[in-house]
Length: 158
Image (cartoon, rainbow, N blue to C red; front, side, top):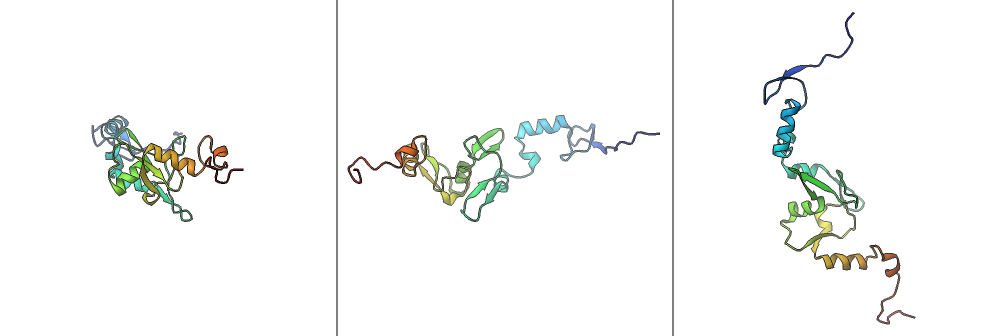
């Protein structure tokens, strides 16, 4: 009686020629890992980074946000990798749709959704602009007390 296992299809690695069990990229594990490390995975994905980026965007019809559907940071911001480099997805989206980000400027969200990469919801500003926007919208560590208090100019103060 023979063993009832499934027979694996064997073919040759397209890079080094050794016999391998068929895998999707057509290379042995050693060659696939070497190619992935050398080219940042782009050769194995078969697409340019911009096309790959757009595959992970999921439009949300109610808000108009384009939600990042891949890796998120612990703060909820999208993360996108190219050749072992990580990028914040909203910054990558700005560069893809609007052009370079000037030195010293941040990419801020009008919608306040960290995972949003819709260029129509993004704008450029300084760190101070980001802090002012956060305070104006009642976000941040002390927002629960500061947002509810009247201005110290005497307007609306008891």
